[in-house]
Image (tube, rainbow, N blue to C red):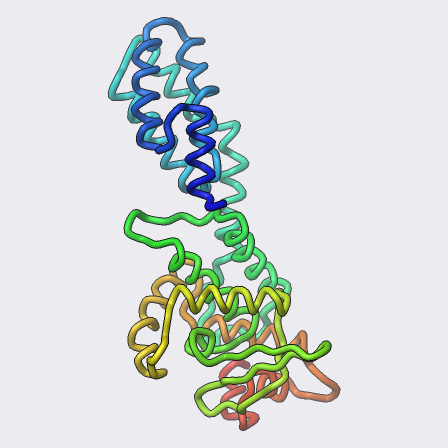
Length: 294
C-alpha cells in the first residue's frame, strides 16, 4: 500500500480526519476546550496527538511537526500555555531521534574531492551505501512541497549506485547493463573510451538490488531518445546540487570513493593499486586515468 494512503487511513481511524492540516485544526479546537482547565488536561493532549507527530516521519519532519503544534498553543494562549509548550518539547523522547539523525548525516558526509584522499576505508563506503539504502527502505527522507518523491528517491539511488559500482551517472541513467551468469557479473554500455564490457564488481549491494534500483532511477529520470550530451545538459547540475545536500562533493566524488575502496577490496595477485583501479573502472590505459584516484 502507498505510504501516504496508509497514513491517511490510520489517521482517519484515530482522529476522524486524514490530513495533517485537519489534525492541526482539530488539535486547536481540543486545546481551546481545555487550555484553562488544569495542567493534566493540556498535558494529556500530547498523548492523544503524539501519534500524528511521530508516525512515519523523518526526524526533520518531526521537528517541523512539533513546531506546528507549539505554534497552535502559542496562538491560543491560555492559563497553562507554558505547561502545554513544555509537554510538546518532549526532550526525553526526541533526544534519541535527534542523535540518530545526526549520526546518519555524519555517516553520509564525506567532503572528499577527486585526488584528495588515497586511503578510504571500504567499510566507510559500505556504511554510506547502507545509510542511503535505509532511507530508501524506510522512506525516512524529507521532501519539500515542490519536490516529487520519485526524484527525491532518485537522487539517493544515484548516490548509492555511484558508490556501489563506480559508474558515471550517464551510464547509470541510460547505457549501463548489469548481467549475471552463475557467480560472474558483467558491466556493459560503458562510456568515455572505456572498454565495452568488464567484469562487474559491486560494493554493498546485491545483483538484484542493483537491477531494481537502476530500473527505479531510470523511471524517475527518463532519457529516451536523448544523447549523452543532452543527458549531461539536463541532469548534471541537478544531480550535483542534490548530492551536495546529501554530503557529497559531486558525482565524480562517488566514482573516486568507489575506485579507492575497490582497489583494496578487489585487488588480484600482484596488481598495483593503479592496475586494480584501471581494471575495475574499465579504463583502456593503465596509468593515465588511474593516477587521478591515487
